[in-house]
Length: 114
Image (cartoon, rainbow, N blue to C red; front, top):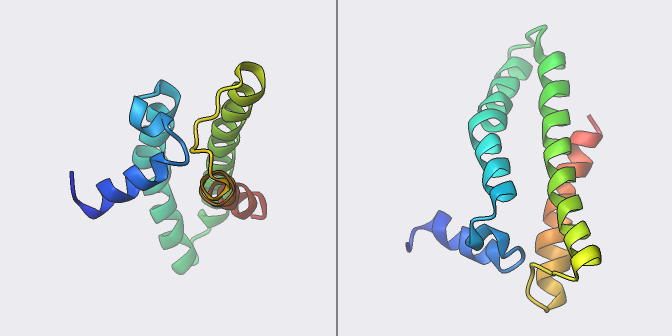
């Protein structure tokens, strides 16, 4: 496909080839993110803007969900790297350190700081 999101997906797949191979962990994690954490994040934003009393519980729940999902995602990659010597990114440091580490690290730092 040549749509913007398809191209972004292909570009990120250079940093993690599991996105193109149909890896079950990645498919499940992305499905949960799209179907659960995405709508709950939107609901949390609405609760914050409207000063709803439920905003704090929603923030904690969504932050922990994002944090746990990303921690699981990154840890399985590291286990595969060190236990099986299987690196999913291209050999250029840019793909590993910027796309994989930095962009996923945001999802650890931001929810972890809430």
